[in-house]
Image (cartoon, rainbow, N blue to C red):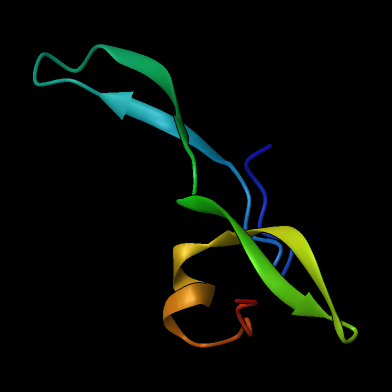
Length: 62
């Protein structure tokens, strides 16, 4: 599960090109953390990317 529950950031695809210009498929995954957060007044475990954690979009539960 590589998808943020807050912003919806997910896996992105592209092509990796080597120095000799050989091309292969590449997948970039976001940095997802499983954290305990307050959702609708109750603590719940959610999958959140590090950008949302850094931007204080999530209120952490203690």
